[in-house]
Length: 310
Image (cartoon, rainbow, N blue to C red; front, side, top):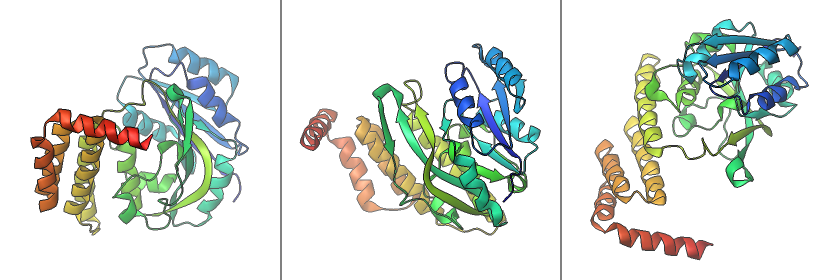
């Protein structure tokens, strides 16, 4: 496939500390035909000055400055400015490896492919460690059935065919989706096109001290909102799924996370919520058992389990 134009959209909000490194990782791609759209989302730090300076250094950088509207809104604005046949996404603190686009773009030679993603190294800056998740749960082709169970791709790994992105109206900027607005978009795309995947680590998803510890409870509710919205859209496209079971599994996954974090009452309530979503007596009993047993007992058991595992 010849070097068609790829538009790279990067939303920026108070990203002065990280932005230059991110931009540099994009500009040194061995795939050269790109435009880099930087959308400042009402930053309060000196991101605007940095963006302006960067744009003066490389004509491929297109700077835009908006009032704060949230990350999904900023991405949609960037999409609206894009001139490329393909649009790639990267967050202001994530990084690309040099061969990312050159390995992904050829997979679009199949016109049924609307999204190509890849593996990402997870970099926990605060803990000075990196991890690489395996490729076992990465899927290609018709992926809606797998994707609705769990988001399998990180935003900084995705490249999307512009025509399909326009077909599904881009990101939903409902703030209730904050944190999972990308998953919501992938699910919309998975209902109208096929995905492909490069089994290589071509991006780095960076967690800093300020974004490592996400609020599980907020993410939990955002994922519920996401599934409810997707269920409605799926009905219009005659896409079926066992929605009650999918939502129950979501609740159970978060209940286990709450136990790990020491939020035992919340875990119990969430197991009970899972039962109410789809009847499951063992799950209901587990929820009530967790709530009845005093928290100090669970704390002792948790500490013991972790010592044994160490």
